[in-house]
Image 1: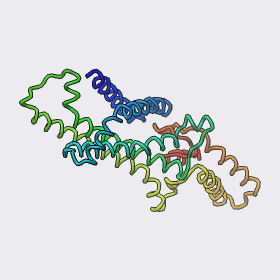
Image 2 (image 1 turned 90 degrees about the horizontal axis):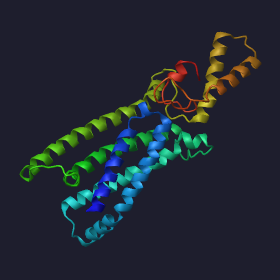
Image 3 (image 1 turned 45 degrees about the vertical axis):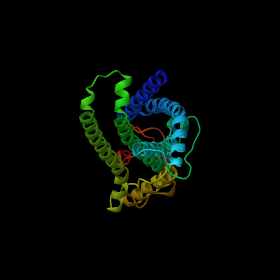
Image 4 (image 1 turned 30 degrees about the vertical axis):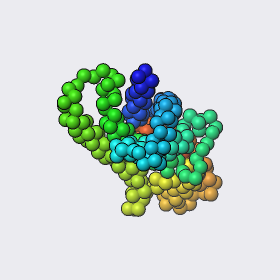
Length: 267
């Protein structure tokens, strides 16, 4: 019983940390990454405590002695693990703390692509966590000594299910909006707007910024010398370093997630 209470306390802490992580606009990047590390530690502890259940469930499924509810729990646990792995990998790939320490892990994909994977995994993990908690509401009520009328258990389960459904839909809508925000710059470029593609990595942005500056200079002054163009190019390249403070994301100028730095002339 004590082990169950400790596990539920760990689950509550893990849920609070996950909810805190979703308010990145208010916490900023550094605090987000520090709390994210603590969240991953609680996940590791949760997986360690769930290892015995996973082995037991695996044997039950192999022997065909598992209930339908047990199968649902197993599928949900597999989905949680499935979205947790890319969340961890993408967190390492886009970590500003690791990047500042000279460690770069942008393998296979660009910074923006890893950011999309990270955002999608985070929202998917939140939605699955809501379902997971809703399915274990009786265990939480028992561990926290929350009194309820056993004859009303079915009605309470229905209310919990409806609340979880609404919360899951809300998280899904927020996730879709987040994915659309990544796609907006690419859509603007397709429509003829001078906006960079969302899939550009840092090196591509460094290449494109000098060219756009050179083109604008050639349009405004046809007699500009080659040396002035080179000077403007190097100046443009130097502006894509540092951190942008024009929006709440505070992302690096080498991989902006919006077009505000371009409109402000920082890039």
